[in-house]
Structures are given as C-alpha cells and as structure tokens.
Length: 242
Image (cartoon, rainbow, N blue to C red; front, side, top):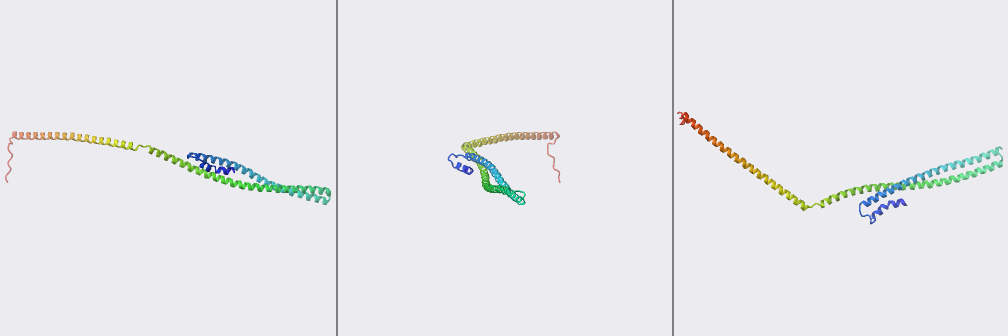
C-alpha cells in the first residue's frame, strides 16, 4: 500500500548512507509529512465518495423494496378486479404476471444494492481506520520534527560556543593580562611616588612656617624687653612678704 510505504519512507531514508548530516533527516521528515498530508487529503476525499456510494446503495435498497411491494400490490388489485368482473380474467392474469415479474426484478435489485451497501460500509470502516492511523503517524512525526529542530538549534548554539572557546589563545590572553598587571603596578608605583613628593613638599612648607613663627616670637620677646627697659622695669618685682 502506497500510504504504508510512505510511512516507513523516513526511517528507510535515515538509514541510507547519504544521510550524514542532521539537516538531511529534517528535510526528509518535512517532505515525508507533506506527502502523508497529501495522502490524507486524498484518503478523505475517497472516504467521502465511498460513504456517498454506501448511502446511495442504502437508498436503492429501500426504493427497490418499495417498488417490489408496489408491484405485488398491483398484481393483487388486478386479480381482485377480475374476480369482481371489472376486468377479464385473461387480461388480469397476464398483467398480474407482469407485475409479479417486476416485483421479482426489484427484489433482486434490492438484494444486490444491499450487498453493495455492505461492501461499501466495510470499505468505509477500513478506510476510516487507515485515516486514523495516518493522522496519528502525522502527529507523531510532527512532534518528532519539533524535537529534532530543537536539538539542531541547541547543537548549533553549543557548537558555535565551543568553537569560539576553542579559538581563544589562552597563552596570548595570559600574556595580555600579565602586561596589564605590570602596567597597573607601574601606574600604582608612580602614583605613590607623586604622593611622597607631595608629602615632602608639604613638610618643607611646614618647616618654613615653623621657622618663621619662631623668629616672630623671638622678635616679640625682644620688643617686650625693650619696652620694660624704657619703663624702668629692669628688675623683676619683689615677692610680697608673708
């Protein structure tokens, strides 16, 4: 059966030696799903046609049965008319015989239509089962395809990251870091040196200011002594007796 062959087509294709990369099963799976969906559409149309034939056969069964009953009823009516003298017995027998022949023909047609109905209904059941299997298979492969695509995305991302990591020159990176450390150390030492120079400059300024303050104090002391001499306070005042 073509449908079953296509159902197993993907598995056979994956086992083929030409399938070496991950993208190939994805493309084959997508094509297989498209093929199965086309088969599903064809099967649904065929199922609708067979169901229509089954319905028509069922209607034919009832119509032929009704016609057979009608011919039988007409044969009875013809014989009754002949019995009442409304119709000649010969004519009534001939026409009643023709009506019964028609009855048998329609009875046979009804039986044939019933056989066709049973065949069509059996075909409908088989086709319906096949369609359910096909739908289930399509759903299964669509789920498998989603998982496969997710795996491809993850594997590609992982491959890209690993490739980037593999291309990193560890020795070059370490050398760069060492140069950066050395530069930072030089800058730190230079900053410390400038700090010491600044401190030295501040110390000299402080010493100068201190020296100037001392000279001012001495000058003030001399000026005080001169003022005392002018006032005649050459000696210290006596301490009062107790």
